[in-house]
Amino acid sequence: MVVKGLQAGWGTCSRTVLFDYIPYALVCWNNLIVSGSYSNIIILDATTGTHTSTLSGHTDFVISFAFSSDGASLVSGSQDKTVRLWDIQTGGVIRIFYGHTEWVASVSISSDQTTIASGSNDGTIRLWKVQTGECSCVADEHNGWIQSVQFSPKNPQRLISVSSNGTAQWWDTNGHRVGPAHGCSSATHSSDGTHFVLWSGGGNGTVQNYDSGVIIAKIQAPGSTIHCCCFSPNKKYVAGAGDNTIYIWDITSSDPHPIKTFVGHAQDVTSIVFSSTLISSSRDRSIRFWQIDPSFTNMGTADSESKPLVSASITFISVQAKDHIAISSDEAGLVRAWDISTGLCKASTQTSVRPPNWRDAQLIGGGFLLVWCTSKEIYIWDTKKGGQPKRVVPRSNFSTAIVRISGDGSKFFLLDSEYIQALSTQTGGVVGKVKLQGKPFGDLIIDGLRVWIDHKHSTPEGWDFGAPGSSPIRLSNKLLPSPWLDFIHTTLPSRVKNKATGKEIFQFPRRYGRFTKARCNGQYLIVGYKSGELLILDFGQMFPQ
Image 1 (tube, one colour):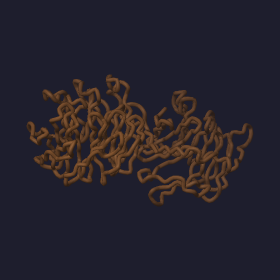
Image 2 (cartoon, one colour):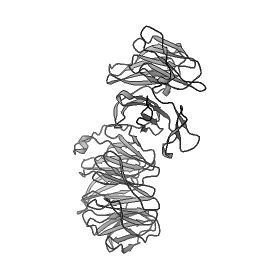
Image 3 (spheres, helix red, strand yellow):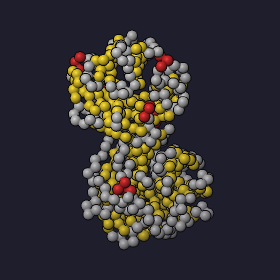
Image 4 (tube, one colour):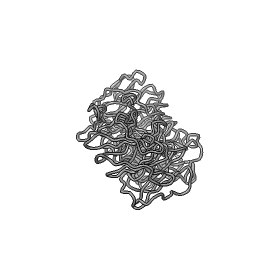
C-alpha cells in the first residue's frame, strides 16, 4: 500500500509513505533509507519509497540510527535503553549494548568503525567498543539530556554532542572535552566532514569549515527554530526543518536567504536527509519524498522565485480507467490529474473556490475541461483552448447539487433531488433528462456517456445518454462500471465492504481512517484526505466487470 504524492515539480511532494507510528529519524546510504516504526526498523528504497525489509528486535520505539562508513552495518538506539548493531545484508543483530538507564536519543559510529557513541535521556554520552561491546567511556558533564551525538566523518577521534540545555560540546574518544561549549540547539556535519553547521535559538545558523573554523555562511530561518538539518551532497546547499516547514539555503551565495520552502507535512518534521531527492519524516506519521529540480541535482542555480504550494483537503475524485488517470479537486479549487502508476502530477489548474460538488473536471485532449457553478451561473472552461471561462447558462434554471462531466467531454450532467439532466458543453443546452424513481444517495457514477446514481432504500439506476437522436436508455444494474462499496466508519479501523455480497474486502490501518472522498473504478480505489494526500489501492481483478 502506497500513498502517492500530490504535487510534482521542485519543492513539491512526489511520494508519501505512511506509518502507524511516528518515524522519528531517517538515515540514508546510497539507495537505502532507514526509519523506525515502533519497535521495528523499516528499510525503504530511496528512489521509489518501496518497503524492502524489516529489522526486528527492539522492544520499544526506535528513534535514532547511523550507518557505518561502508554501509554494511547499522546502529540503532531505542526507548528500550539499548543500542544495537545490525548486519544490513542478513538483517541479523551483530551486538547489543547495555548500560543506559533511560532511552537512547542519538547514536553515531566512527568512520573507522571501531567506536559507537550514544546519547541518552539519562544525561550521559557512552562510547562503546564495536569488537567487544564494552563501554570504554561515560561522559556526563552536560546539564540536561543528550539530544544528539555525531562523530566527525573526517576524524574518528572527535565527536560533537548537543544537550537539551542548548549547548554543543566537542569530545575526544577518551571522554575529554575539546574546546569551549557553544550555544546551540542542533549541529550537523557535511557527509565528507569538511563543513558543519550550528543552529542557535531563533533559527540562526552558522556554517563553518571543520579544519579552520572559518565561517562560510550565516543563515536564518524565517521565524523558526531549526531542529534537524542536512547538507546536500555537493555541500552547496543546507536544508533545515522548523516545525512542519523545510527551508533550503544556497550557502555559496553572497546573500544566503532561503531559496526554497517545502510545505506539506501536517505536524513537526523530525528528520531530513538527501538522497537522489530530499526526504523528510514527521510527527504526522509520514515520510515524504520531495521533487528536486534537475538544476539542483546537477549543482546548478536554484529558482529563487518559486513559491511553495500547500495541499488542501481533497473534496472530489474522478478515476479515468482507460488512461490510468485520477483527477482530484481540493477545497481551494485546485484541480490535478495524477498518473495512478507513478503517483506523479501530469497537469493542474486553478478554478474558483466553490463548494466541491458544484464543479467537475476531465482530462480531454491534453487539457482540462472544467465545469463549475456559482450561486447564479454555470461556467465551462477548456484550458487547452485558453481564454476565459464561458458562462453557458443561468443556474437559476436548475436546482443542481452535483455536477459531473461525461467521459468524452461532450456533455455534463446535473443532479438534483428529482432529475438527472444532460447539457451540451458546447452550447449549454439541455440534451437529455430523466426523472429519478427514488431519492438520490451518494455521487453520480460516470462511464463515458453512461450515468448511474445510487438510492438509499432501493436499487441503483443507470442510463445511457449516448444514443443518437433518442431519449436516454435505461441500463440494467448488471452493467455497473464498478463495485458499489460500503465504507464503515462506526468503529476504527475503517472497513470496506462489497455492497452486493456484503463481504468485507479491505480494512484500513488506523492512520488511513476518516477520509474525505473515495472513488473506485473496479481496479483502483482512490481515497482523498484532509491532509491533501491521495491513497491509491490496487485491487487487481478482485471485481471482474
